[in-house]
Length: 291
Image 1: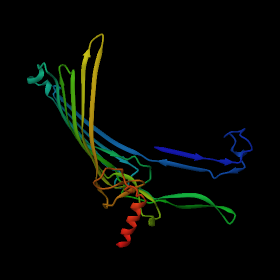
Image 2: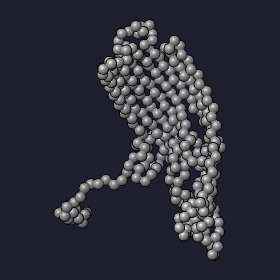
Image 3: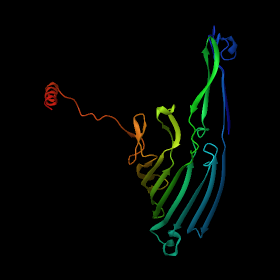
Image 4: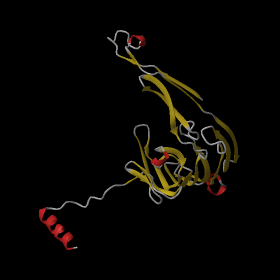
């Protein structure tokens, strides 16, 4: 993908008659800017599906993705997935049941990748501009960002197990899913020591875990030509935890932080212990002098 941008600006118009159609009418032209961004994504994908009598279902998928946004040794990564399902309600011992109309057990595992960062973040960059020096305008170039050739894909591996069951011609349908999702090599524009000359750099900072359960219940209470009534209920519980951080140190992001053993984006700050009235403050001052 190629993206090109250019900008021209001037100030000091006598009036707004020309709008933006005549920049030359401004008395104070600004420095024009232009930029071009190019990056590529190369993907290979394959899938195999197997269905035996609509009872045993298997899906296998393999995907290889390459992104120019990462370091030269880490541009490609492989992301497999597999899904298995058993529709027990189609077996002989349940196919004639008047109570259970659907019973399906399923499990899946899959890996996905994230490359949604700006281009060139694995490379060092320069920032250019102009400055007035000795009465003349001179151009300059200064380092804009640090290089990180170790930058690589963020990967998420998820394991899911589920149950689908329907009663009375699916008038009552229940779905239950439990899952565990582990994200490794998390991508973050993380702070760096100011002694480096920079404030942030994109890097892989560690791993986090999400695990939980989702329950959905749908019922058809009344279904006729005059009146219909359906009920839908769902609940989900998720626990998020930072499993590990590169180097083990906390990452501070304004009023939140990323810390091992805590959820991502945990707030931090002072603890308000209340206020003292005049007498309590005087007693506290006496206590401090005694010690």
